[in-house]
Length: 150
Image 1: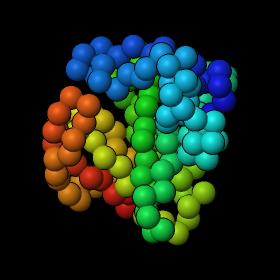
Image 2: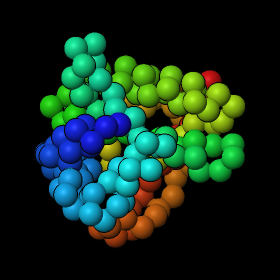
Image 3: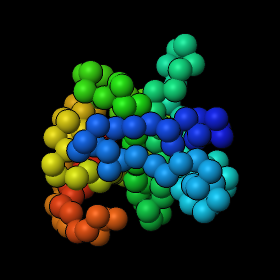
C-alpha cells in the first residue's frame, strides 16, 4: 500500500452502521504512527486492492497472529459495498495471503451483526469456527472467527 492509497482510504465515509469501520484522518494516523500510518507496518502488512483500471477498490491487512496463522483485515471502498462482488474481492485477498503465507491457516474476525460481510466471506470460502466477545473502541462486542477452507 502506498501513501496515496492510505490517504484515500482515510477519507472513505461509510453509512451507519458500517461507519465504525472508518479511519482517523490521514494526518492523525500518520502522526500517531499506528496501523498503515506506520511506514513499516504499511509495507509489511497492508496491501491495496486495485481493479484492472488501477482504481483503488479496497485494502487488506495480512497480520501474522502466530507462526501458523495469518489474520486478515479487509476493507472495501464504501461505494462498492453491497453490490454482490464481495466474494470476488475476498478471493483476491485470499490469493495474496496464500502466495505470501502458503503454509499458514487464514482467518479473520467479523462482528456478528455484519451479515453482509459474513455472506461475502462464506462465498469466498470461509467458515465460522468460533464466537466470542472482545473489547472494541465502543465497548465489548460479539465477534465470529472465520477460517478459510483450503
